[in-house]
Image (cartoon, rainbow, N blue to C red):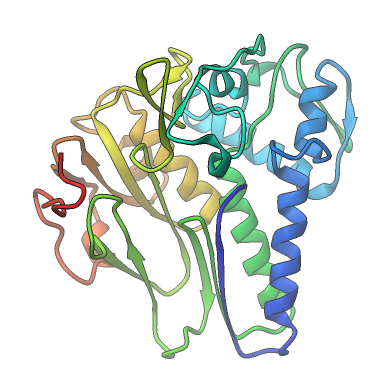
Length: 305
């Protein structure tokens, strides 16, 4: 998953924070596409053949396929080949600001993934990359397990995908600060009693390859980094995996003047920002915000272009 983790546990046994750390590391080991020993890497390596996977990885693939169907293909867990061709062929920490486009003959094929009992079979010559849904699902799994094991409250933050449940340290709702890469202070503060907040942006995991500016969000229609006018999206939903998927759906919505159709259909709320700094929001999002959203963001001098 390649992200920093921040865990807050309220009440319960003192061992829970360490258990959360171990569980996150376990899921990272199962799901990282950069670890050749992971189950996700095995799915790609043995594409065309059924691969026995753990219950956790089976759930990950099931959620990814549900997301693919829900978004009508805007979220696609089989764009690994396109990511490699865009230059994202290693952990982002190792990528550097300028790289050469990679080579891969892997193609997309989410529609032909087969799940039978405890096995997953990708179609031949197809790669699987859970992307952000892995962070979201991991946050959901760990939060639910900690509550089951006795925590009064828990907050799991995996690379900006946040899941909260139960009592916060203050005894009230949890407050999640939403940060924008081009702003010095938090852009918004979201208050929720339970549920999830996920943020995706094309401004953070970005690089140059072969003289072109590129980023990690692949448009499945073109097989290349998205050129949508929207560059930042935050979604509030019941589960982090769903919130993460819906951020991608917002950023890849072909109708950027009304990008929240799927969000509202899923009883979620969202806001987004375009490349000019204009702010858009869905119906109902104001109920979660500590302060009203501005119509336009003012970038910090250090990041202004």
